[in-house]
Length: 302
Image 1: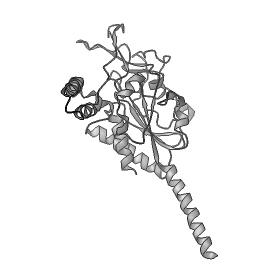
Image 2: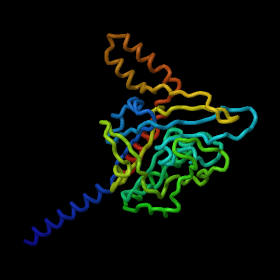
Image 3: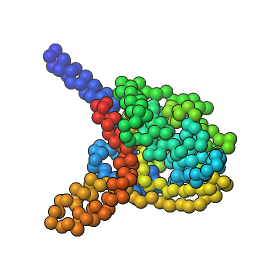
Image 4: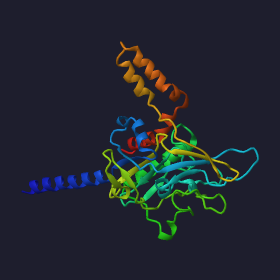
């Protein structure tokens, strides 16, 4: 009888421990911002286990023409729209006024099971390559993920410290003069995940703060070059041109598909033509930098 009780006790303890370990694991939520059609450019099967979502695409990237005479911009450079503004990777979250677009390739957040953002990537970092800044961010995220696995969540900041920097309504450009920027590079660390709407692969709407509830998450916002581009005059901010970039191409996927039928040289030529521009620009590789970092982080903290 005693042996049976011991065995039952051990099994119960194992179940409890397995539940704890499962609760401390990480889920990767990847959200494409910009034109949702561009999300199709990503080869999702290269990121097993990731949960993919899109946004309504209602955002743009703003910049002004360069001038020979030193002159401050009329408006801050960067992303505008509900998603980047509520998620804190908009123009105001640059660390230095007048700098280039902050979070050019998107942003990665590490979120605790209490729904609070524990850390995030830096505003001026590029999420690919081997730069010192890249590894600083990588190590910072990895360290925080290890803390979360031990159940050490980030405390929620007081309401007075969770105030957005932007002064103009959502979607409107932020004047350069007398505007606030994120000089300390704090971003939304210590904030709850904002309530924004994202869409799954079937088009069903979800609240992001609900998707991240009660679990440790790596939350990636990325774009396959799908954000509408606007360029304006530095003289008065008049918009001079607008355009949408060409959807990037996964060269490896295209060439592999073409070589599967060696008896049809036309398919190979088509693949070469389709990927020629990508071979020069490397936009696809840049676009997936945040996803690759997330994949590397998950592997590192298993």
